[in-house]
Amino acid sequence: MKILGKPTSINVRKVLWTCVELGLEPELEPWGSGYRDTNTPEFLSLNPNAMVPVLKDGELVLWESNTICRYLAGREQRQDLLPAEPAARARVEQWMDWQATELNNAWRYAFMSLVRQSPAHQDPAALQAGISGWHRHMGLLDAQLAKTGAFAAGDQFSLADVVLGLSAQRWLMAPMEHPELPAVASWLQRLNERPGFQLHGANGMP
Image 1 (cartoon, rainbow, N blue to C red):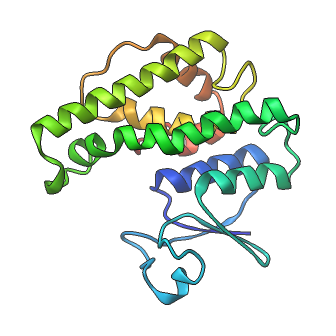
Image 2 (image 1 turned 90 degrees about the horizontal axis):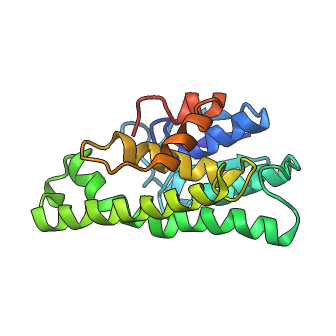
Image 3 (image 1 turned 180 degrees about the vertical axis):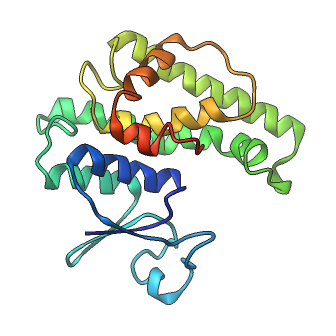
């Protein structure tokens, strides 16, 4: 098994954390900014989006980090991370999809401005709107965690916590004022008890 991507990428780190939870030790082949160019024909033949990560498992090639995490949990038959029962699985996948479609879009402008220092993302009004939207979405997560009292999809750790945990750590590390979100803070403490999060989440990389 091989993962193509760079260890600093938040989406690669989702997959690496999932592998720790599953006891897998795939080979990491570095691709992306600062490493091998993902716009080469070799990489584009694997992922036409030119994005990392890509998983190669024998003849199987997969891209999209959340899909890769789902595949690996299913491959290892880890129903604690991704339940087989339809309603329980849907609750996990609901929060995974929310992370990819809603939360990611909420932090994009502010992250590019504050962390990446992108010259194209320095409009004050757009930055403030981005910060406000990021905080609002994190507030939704805080409300969910306060409701469950444990983890994102319920009382058991799941893949939803992997993908959301990395996003929450990015929010926490961004150089801006943060509202108090006590349920998020307690949840991050619980995540920090897991070796995979220590290696790939609370590791100093936003």
